[in-house]
Image 1 (tube, helix red, strand yellow):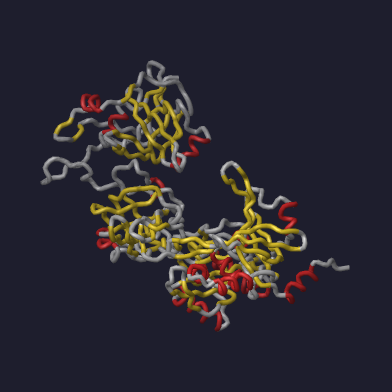
Image 2: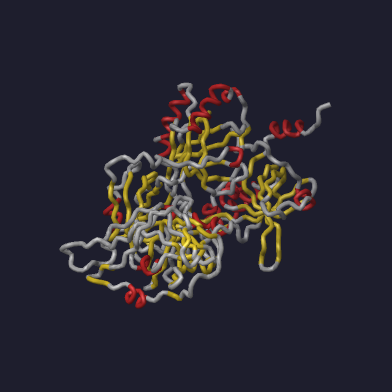
Length: 619
């Protein structure tokens, strides 16, 4: 049955009409190849057609078939953006009126010249208006039996306001419309978001081929739960660093969107905002209670056991113990503070949380005072980093936030459980215990690694082997590494000497006088069932040899063969517990099982005897 679409709907949108809520038909749908699923539509008003993009929150409409080729839809929220002189409609919300029908009219691609011809312009303002309708999606019969669907709410199109004393209207002079963070995309020419600052990073300085610079970032959360990171560089840092306050609500506009760097950005958004010299950040004087103070996605401790290494998570638990703060030296030679504490929850598991730097003296000191006074506080960790070096643990990074006894339903439930029964319930640690051993470790022999096909599944296998190190290759036991720090981690990329005798890192694109040395040990280990080769990197290499790679390399380069040989020999033929990561990897066209040493513990015969006795079944 024929249907009347909104007359002149496409030209009106392209001329700036964002209020008419037109009826249009979907002529085509295509999936665009990008880091996130996006769909492109071809829309028609029966005369003109125009390319459009739908916001990602509308993807399910296409997947479920609610919107498909031939559908007649009403555009409820939309904007028009210009991309390389070509206009595109970005649909933020729409409603399906007719699921499918034949192509209506004889539509052709809209041309800008045709728009001007059909829409006379006087002083830069379109004279076209649309007659408002009071019908509510009720079809009415016309004399020619054509069924007409009127939009649910279709107010008259209001031309853009005239800005007096500014001469002719300039592009982007009108205030940008506030849109949800989830609807942001690079195809929008003008936008604004209203959001709360949930986190603010430290001011960092850097040096690269372009010279010195400075950078800082902050995170936004809006009333619909959308999150996004905002980054400022150099002169923009001077404008906004002192202005931004965590917890306050701001309206931010005129920034550019670029793909988020997931190595450093844990937020659930594929884009990141970069503020520029023309960007605006305006404080909202009135508190907006519709925007939450913080948003969490808590993961039970039992699920951290299977979480990917280096993944960023939120976790909440009761603090049961806090260790004193101790100084440690980072790999780049800088000294920092470290404090360890334990969290437990209703899942029956506990995990070690490591606080670094300022967290130790700020939240860490307060937690220690509470625990020492007999109180077990609830701690919520926002953006903690999972580490699987020895079991599973969680550590703080620069973007981590800690909340002691937060006012949230999760914290209330946890407190109630702990006070009622949790304080008397033993929990199983997914981290190393106080003696440095691992709980729930999977013991295997060397022959079982091959016989059971360990490491050949999609995920790596983690096992503990009691073995003896029988041989260590000494020709290439370490490599020259970049000493620079990226974020919270050392680069560690292999470096080479440049023409001016300085060390050069291709990854950091920088040169420096001295490099670092990191272990890359190839060791042969054996037990009563067989032998195999394993690889030990920096930390494991230091545990095996008892000294740093730099010290051992100096002995060799200075020709101190006696000391060098003594270090190697003292590391052989002693029984150790090796925590091994076993994973099949592809080298060229050949697949090989790679065995990496994650942790080395000298054998404690008392603990090992208890373990062996536990293997004997009770009668």
